[in-house]
Image 1 (tube, rainbow, N blue to C red):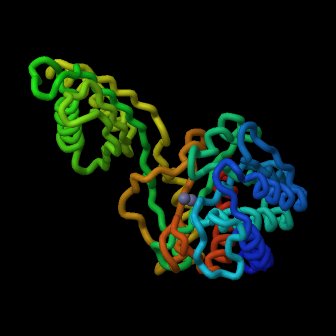
Image 2: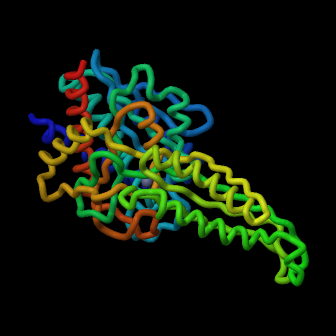
Amino acid sequence: MNIRESVREVIPYAIEMRHEIHRHPEVSGSERETAARIRRELEAMGIPVRTFDGCHSLMGTLRNGEGPCIAVRAELDALPIQENTGLSFASETPGVMHACGHDVHMALALASAKWFSTHPDDWHGTIKFLFESEEETIGGGQRMVAQGCMEDPKVDCILGQHVNPNYPVNSFYSRCGAVNGASDDLKLTVHGTGCHGAYPEKGVDAIVITAQIISALQTLVSRNISPFDPVALTFGTVRGGTVQNIICGEVELTGTLRTIRPETRALLNRRLVETTEGVATAMGGSAAMVIEPSYGAVVNDPDAYRVVEACAREFLGDALMVEQQAPSLGVESFCYFLDHTPGVYYDLGCGIGTGLHTPTFRVDEDVIGTGVTLQVMAVLKLLEFEQAKR
Ligand SMILES: [Zn+2]
Ligand SMILES: [Zn+2]
């Protein structure tokens, strides 16, 4: 029997698990029952499970002789959204819904685990099934990585997939190289000197300084960075002042910087500080820019991508291969795993219903069979590919 045929055995299980998990969603940080359920399923397959301190993340490690180690990542959390799909297996928890497809990703990982655990003659090596908590908020992957999920044995390559309703059912959407951007959180405080609004000469207006800083910072993107290098610089909040006739002495801003290239990220981190301090000083005030690095970029490894892309093309056919034209400046916590190993991240088109994170988000269930088959085939190909390098 070929692999594609034999994976059919676990598709009903994947669909059943997806319904079960979809019925009982838990928001980020509260994924206790979901994690317990995943643990029971993995242990019933004879797969040892480890947990991680400070979160509900867990990992099943399936060993089958000597060989490379491939990891598969799924996420545990749902969203604070009231479901309005009318599905027979809709959420039974008011105000909480699997509206980002993480129920599907967990079901795919469990079904893959079931297939690999029942077909030991078809592969050798180690497969780690990672279930990440709090993907939607802080990115639980960070804690898993810090606690050694990528070691012992060392993961040679990691695979991540996400359903995406913007693309046709069963399509593969990704690209070689950067898929998602890096993000830095910005906090800027501008100091002036408050005074009566009728006597501006007696103070230093922090609001006027802020206006100049915002304009100057927007020119960094257009004047310091190539038009072909994607960057977004956004200030989402500006707070300052009390009443209409008092000159404001302090303004606070928060924002986000999104970049793809590490060199661009470093350059802009430096220029953001230089520009804010320079403009504020020139205007008689002062400014302090605090930059907190947040997510890293998600960059598909070119060699591993070619392996997975070829596998998807063979399975799905040319018509369902949608090449992502440019990286997205949204962030993805898959980046934390990629700090330690090459990997491939792709979207699986699930093309019905409305967008991710909406109350009417739905998935064409055909995608579940396609997703499991593609995941199993891709892991097998990556095992072969890594074995050949040894
Ligand atoms: Zn989401
Ligand atoms: Zn998601």
